Image: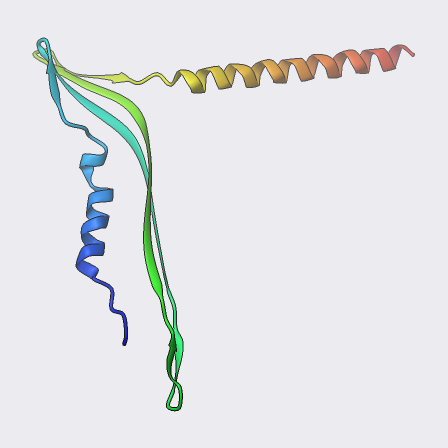
Length: 124
């Protein structure tokens, strides 16, 4: 028996994963403004297949296959729409800011230690 994938189901799943609704959330009203949330979305897909041999004595052997989807997202900000027009308000990623500050502090500490050790070796 040979397996035939349901392509309609695969296409429907892909359309759901890669659709514009994954980027723009449901709009809502806050006061006099219409707020539209926006996210950054990274999608990936992969697939594979298999094969086998067919022998008249033993029958068919082997086969297989599969398809997978992956998605990663993070808030990007919101569009605020009012009588004056639309305005973009970016989301602030505090974790990324803190990590950047920590990396900068470590880089400065390494540079200072290197400069002090080099100065000491020059004095000797």
